Image (cartoon, rainbow, N blue to C red):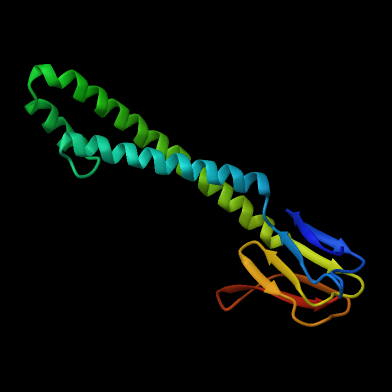
Length: 168
């Protein structure tokens, strides 16, 4: 592998990595790009829904979603305004349920991504040239000197995670 961007969920095996004439190569492992896109779409939906929730709560004069306070607000409203306010409260209730489901999906994606990172491994049988950017899950490492055959993977020690190098 000489240059560019290489992305793999579980790992990469290569005869050599990088080039003295092209030090720009980036490897990303332990991350599923499709799941990254799904997670970003969920985060976008959460932000949009939270903005709508805030607008509805402000319109009803309530600072946070509290069914008792909302019921009290609805009781105080004149009949002419109540139907529209009830619709807003129903929308708000559906959003709260939707948000919980989206947050669970996001947690499942995060768990899967974490598991990919635990098994991701880079194995290079020959030379590794300086300039390689390596990312495994949420950890990064810049190769700053030429190396010989090596294996890189995540390692946990003393409660922290980092990329470790082992001779191949």
